[in-house]
Length: 500
Image 1 (cartoon, helix red, strand yellow):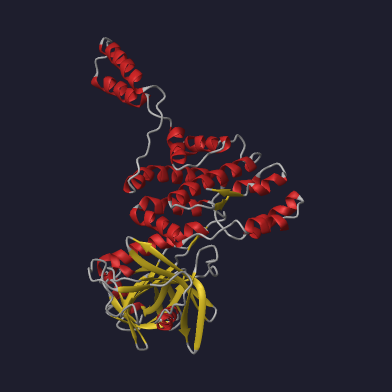
Image 2: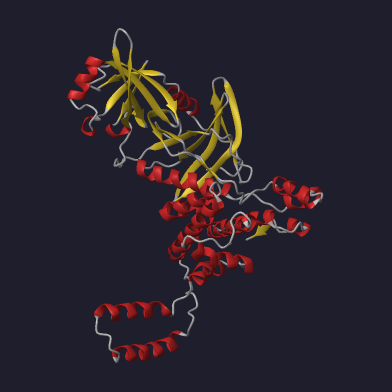
């Protein structure tokens, strides 16, 4: 519909922002449908992505409340929150009672009931099983600051807030399963919101699945997965973009990693190294800046498509991004699981693309092993082994005797994708078994922390190499392991960016 940088208008943004602000600004609401509250006012506050409610009742009311077991799970029913001219529907599984506290003075004894509300809807919002095709807009506040779209082949767009016309370059057009999605950022006052729209009508299930793939795919590249809160709007159509219904839902905390895997800003990567190397990086920064190219929408779309088709990759991406916040003892184990998960899914991805994955080399030629196995089985038959369990155990061992090693299995996809691994990178892949068996590839964590840190950086880099190469990326990515090299060698400046 548009080329890469054409001017483009997104409608209905302000009305959606008003809906988000109305929800986030809720301070009190009347409850309708909760028996023990009798349509009383519930004080509300948005804390840790959820709404916390507080209601105070007298001792007499509590005795009636307790006698009727209204705190039982079967009595946690759906109810309405009415605030000014807005009515929100809280589903039966959208709230729970999390605390009870007594207080007393000379005149009365009271009990404070604490409620937690993690989802509600406004208007005729569809259920998850609804097959009607609609237009949606996903919005989430970005508490951690704005996102960097400059590392991507971004597009321009415009939107209005109040009497102000805003022009922005923070938009990407992604394509997943033959459907286009706009991902963009809008701002109002001091707040920014990440948004995702579907360009073609979809069911709620399809849209929600695609949003997850986009959030985690984009989040993997920038090493920041924006979650926290979901504000999902049903729109009256693609052209007008006006909301007719809304859902609020608390999500898990956003995930921010500490390692960089891709950037077009050479200065941000090289500048921290010039002090340790006592080298002026200005000239080299200019040279690299000319070579670092933005990631295309096609590559990011392919990455999101892989996550859309394979839930296991979403788990792997989560582990890759989140692992950098853990201790070094934990990072290696988590990244080993992520590397294993990616390797398990690669054959399915290659098969979907019509490519054949070559098998890992066996320790012994299969034909020779087949002859040797017959001799071993003949010897076992002639032995005094009588119990079936013993024979089964030996057969099981023979079935795996000529299989490739775990290291060969983990490194094979790299060669299949045309990625050459250095000796130290192959060595890191060998540490997978060490980590997964609860051991560390160093003798003293305190004395060899730098070595363990380097291993974790390299394993993080290996995971990133596989995912970006699978997505079809052709360019330079950041090799963070060059930052931890023990030798202050200026030559490291030429190895920080790696072409794949």
